[in-house]
Length: 425
Image (cartoon, rainbow, N blue to C red):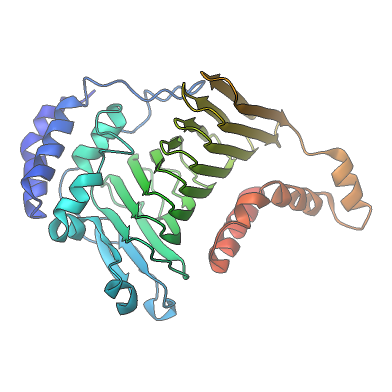
């Protein structure tokens, strides 16, 4: 373990170069001092203490890698970051006039400090939750801030693209902060992509906070495609107030080792979270995914659907946790975790956990680990398909709930191509 206090002056210098307000500098310093004191996050049945999650380089980095062709961009709101640098940002004057804020987190901290301070690692993901969140708070190197005012409905999807340069030795610590005010409605899509893949062992740490005020509705989609040389901690969490909803659709297509916390805290009566996750593990990759919905208020609904495919000598662990707290009468907690194993040398776990502290609720779970249904294969092969093609069709159908939920067709096609590439290795 590093002696994190040795980084104190570097963290202060990093913050000063970005002209961060004093509260942000203090937050970084306080987090730095807590890293050694806090425990690791608990991901059942996954041992990750020796993973390369602490390799940080607290100096500013220049943009690197291949930047997309901006003349191919559509008119919808979009931000592209390469490393810590924002290389493209687009928001229509119409949305800006309605009070929508969509910018990189560095700019947001400078131009909207009080608004960011109110929500940044205070409601959804606390700084001191564990050593990984404290590490993130100390060394965060950009991200995005999205604020949608009351009653604003945005028709076009809002996109963020985060490019990671695998040939660089900088850490990749991104923060996404989304605030949906009362009765607002929009779709948000984020992508994390690596370019290049060297033997350097790199660290990733991503925290996403989505706060939905009363009546807000958010469709949140993500496709993670980070490279094999980066070990990553992912924490995505919703903080849902009365009658609000988040519909999550997350495709985990990374090549490196991953531990993930995907949580929804249903703090307001009538709030609703639908969580759909698909993942593929291949090679010698290890992925541990904790998906939790906590029903804290009456008449809340939390549903979890996790489907995964395991290849080669890889490991995939799904932990689904539904927790209904005392006082959450009329709550509904349902979960389904299913894993397809395509190799005898792979390992899969689907662990359902229900924690019920209240009466008059509805709860249930389903879990399975198995192979491709031979009857489905036989049906497709009887109609002229080769076995490999038939198997891919079955798997695509198995992963379909998330693919069809992605709001941008081009990203849907990209996710399908990524899946096909992994299955064809």
